[in-house]
Image 1 (cartoon, rainbow, N blue to C red):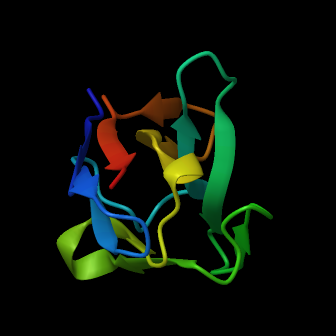
Image 2 (tube, helix red, strand yellow):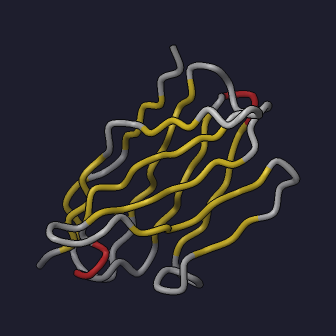
Length: 116
């Protein structure tokens, strides 16, 4: 069964940086879409960034210019570099992967807390 494992979350001060990682047990070369979502307490899950099978990357408006998505196929890993973090970025961040055929997977999430 497909497994996605996120890591890299933690506590950081406003203006700081974190880099999240998502390792896919089934590899990342055969995907329709890989993405990061986040969910803050009491709020709906929000799209953060995503990359299609053609390599096209899109960002949510609230993170554009501050976050950078990348991937390393040799390590079966997708990354999210988060710079200039703000308190409103506090959330659980989830990795998402969609395989050809529509199988849709989420990781268990990693907590990011931005606070002074």
